[in-house]
Image (cartoon, rainbow, N blue to C red; front, side, top):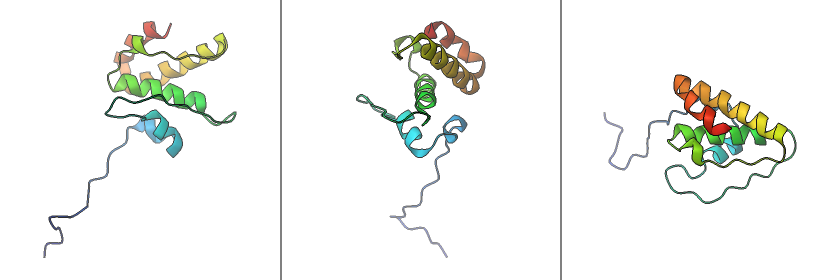
Length: 110
């Protein structure tokens, strides 16, 4: 007995990278914004302690993983302290994902 039909909608589940598994749905959506196409701007508005910095750091790492040139990513913050924290987080996340190849982003983050 064959249960599959020509119009079957069964699809294999997509495997999610481990670094995205730590994000909630809204964060993951922001990180993957415009996947596979040229995306317009993305505005992230959220309260204190909601994970904005973490989401932005994951977004930058995700762009690099997908082939973006890290020297062409502009990430702005309002203070040197925030910029330092952002760079540290991006390096950590990219290091987890890219391993030895993450060294290429170190110069781009300064």
